[in-house]
Length: 193
Image (tube, rainbow, N blue to C red; front, top):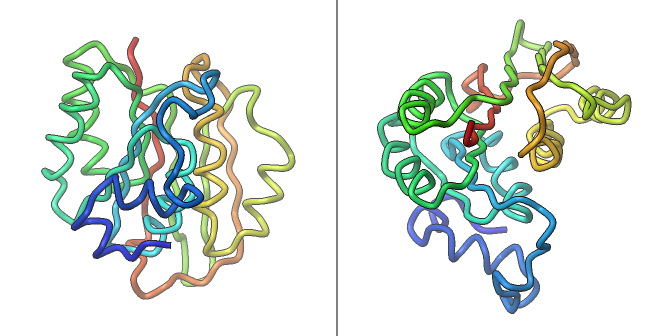
């Protein structure tokens, strides 16, 4: 696994080489049935690192951002130029900026999950899902503890290109809040309308 500092220095290429065996796979070898999407996450917290390590296996490109919400602007602009859906695990402020930029270009917010600590030992996940909500996902979230971003990163690719979610599901789990955790993150998908 690549360190957060090395990822931010080297960008997507370093993440690609750590996720692929020997760094030998090319874009042409990627599964063609899966939609291409770009992923953005906060890398100043452990949740972002876990999300990044998992989503890096299916995303076309991944981007780590720091604590400045404005750092998302050039990443969103590039994804829009490529006409790719964009997924993320970020703060509300980053999502707000990304959504404003993307909706002006004809994108819509098709999925939003809220992940917040409601106490020192309770983590609540609010996900608005349709047919992709499975008991397995709910069970996995309940058992995941601080590794919940891995579950979300595995769920999101299945939601890209699907219809607008309709049912709000809330799962509360026992999970001690890490000292580096922001305590509130949002997972999301922005895609062409």
